[in-house]
Figure 1: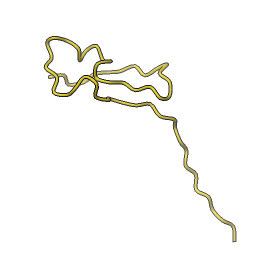
Figure 2 (figure 1 turned 180 degrees about the horizontal axis):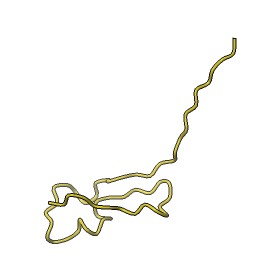
Figure 3 (figure 1 turned 90 degrees about the horizontal axis):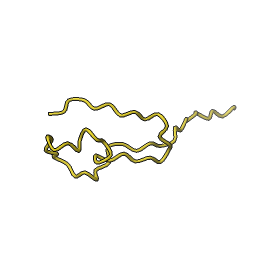
Figure 4 (figure 1 turned 90 degrees about the vertical axis):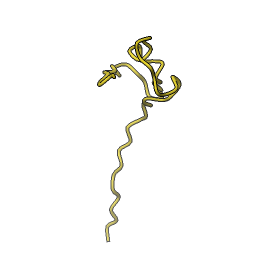
Amino acid sequence: MVDTITVDLDGMKTGTVLTVKDIPELMSNKIELQVDTDEIVLRINDRTNHTSITSEE
């Protein structure tokens, strides 16, 4: 059983989608996957800052 996998996200751009098959450690013949290799592991989105708008009375 794989406990932890570290993925370097440095240089990945917004919109990048990482699937199981993109992680070499998971593509080993020594591992029996319980998920489809096309399953999304993560998706990089833009950071959105939400600010409160207060009205002056």
